[in-house]
Length: 171
Image (cartoon, rainbow, N blue to C red; front, side, top):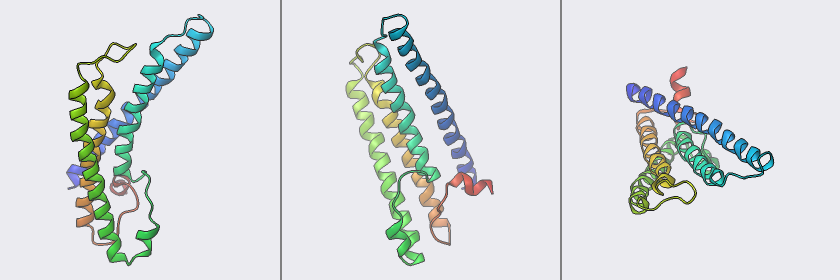
């Protein structure tokens, strides 16, 4: 299991690195839009749609990493008020539900990609499939990361882990 977690460390690190590069590209696009509008008096029309695609490509995969690193939104009040033995099983059940949701995102997102692939994104001239590929990637990563959490939850003998997998292995 430790080897798989190390491999997933690399995957989550790569997702964060690519998101960082995409964020720099987003800033450059917005800078170009401002320059085009106020300096050249000719607003580039493609920037708005390109920025929207870039934001989706950043947010969805990073949200999947959030499932692994436990920085996603979660409400722990009810779980924390239960006996310690129940907390573990509630956490495993929640991870199973999140994994199922991620799998659904990947499967039905892929169907959506196939359905819209022949159509072009206005102003960009690329396939509409590029709009939905981050959904497929994010769903797949969410399912894999949640499955890792489930396995670790079953191996663990104490209560649910409160911090990310990477942080636990770095100690």
